[in-house]
Length: 487
Image (cartoon, rainbow, N blue to C red; front, side, top):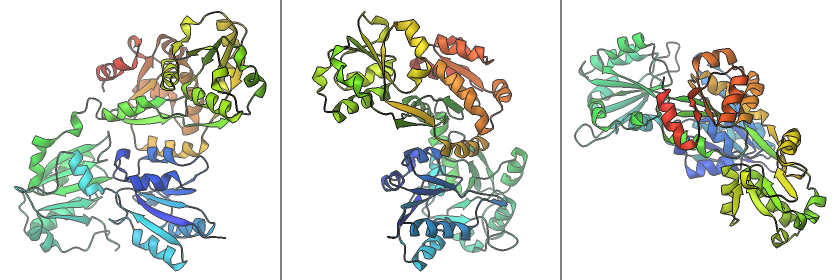
């Protein structure tokens, strides 16, 4: 069997938009992804449907897999002929043990590529408003590990060289040894008044910063119970933050949002919320599986007066089915309708005039959608009368993402849940237990936002107490509602 290839990829510091194009291309063709705790799990959304996910996260005193085991897994999967991606937070060449992994692959004659990433020692300060070099504050910069291989866990570094020869220093994961770091820098020449900033979860919506000096930062961090993952930045350049802070000014900065999903398509709403500074979990994760094509329906497609598309995905699937059966689209004489604004938009993007289904005229009706059509057949019959159905796909929960969600929830404190539709409420309740979500706790601690009156009613029926007056009527009002319900 031909050996596979391994891509040792830097995922960047947390903001999923900071991965490189080459890194994303590797994810998109992966058969297996071995991923770390500090990568943004949204990057896994871009993996192929059959890709295997293996968690290799490392936390203080708790390593899911030892480095030797990770090395062996990379070798085993590559020897099976698979394309393997080792997805690491930040840059793989900066405290990412990429050298050890590459050496193991070389020993077995396995080809590999190293794909650089943006390192947190540069990115986290920038998201806190601090460039690590500046003509007036410092022309030298160093990255330093805050941990060593010895029993003490303290790194062996040239303290005098750092203290006297470097203007700005970034210590990685330095909270545990913070007192020792500060003492040594002062002992070897740094002023006790030298500014220091701690940046936790840098570039993420839950980013947290704490400022002080070499003399005061340890006691401040102890009082705040500040924890890793964090960058400790030391240098006069920290003072520039007061002028250049930008990320924390975003309207939804700090919000921890769960967006309930019923679609397998990428969410524009999730992207907008993230752009406004929030951390967003899209839950649950769906995948669409093509359904057998009902040729009987397609052969009489010219007989329908109205075609209603249940979801935007069904628009694409329907026309692909026509092409696959060699049916000329000009045979379709029906007027098109969408079950939502998004469905109408999907039709218009293909050049078809379409309306929302409230204006539907009488005539023979075909409803196009996924397997939800069968589950809601009585609803559609009551609403539209006798009709035919064309099922394009069936949706199912992507089980690969359940452990991914569980880990994401461990690192977040949810303060908001958004229900974009009535169906999203029941789906959320059904699947929440799979991820260990305590619904009673969620109801007490999170603001519940409903989009539309039917969604509001569905949420109340399940015991949720939505906020808003009385609900969010459209996406444009969502940001304002979230700001008003701020924690």
